[in-house]
Image (cartoon, rainbow, N blue to C red; front, side):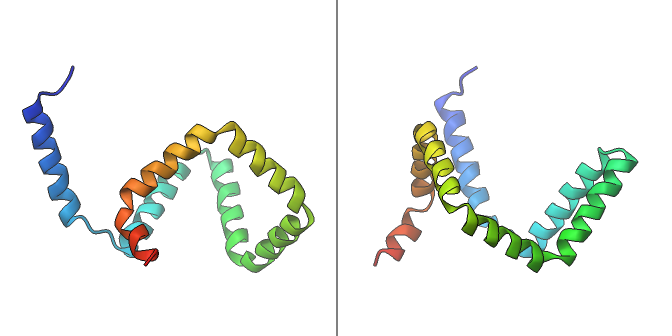
Length: 116
């Protein structure tokens, strides 16, 4: 079912009003992520929940060790990673171009400001 021009205009006005006053803080983002994590954990059985929590604690306690391991892997497999990225970009040219168009449209002012 298509919308009438009047309905589309009203929806555009409502969207503009929401966008004008919309503001999300870092606390809101953190709260949202915590709620998302809880929702995912609630969907798991007890054993999977225990494993997930154990992995989360390990990652939190070993951030530097994990980061160093990832740096070493990327350094040792630089060519392999570059080839994988080339293949992905070749296979997804349209998807990447569309994503870039959307980003540019949403951030024209920011992009213009950075080029000054």
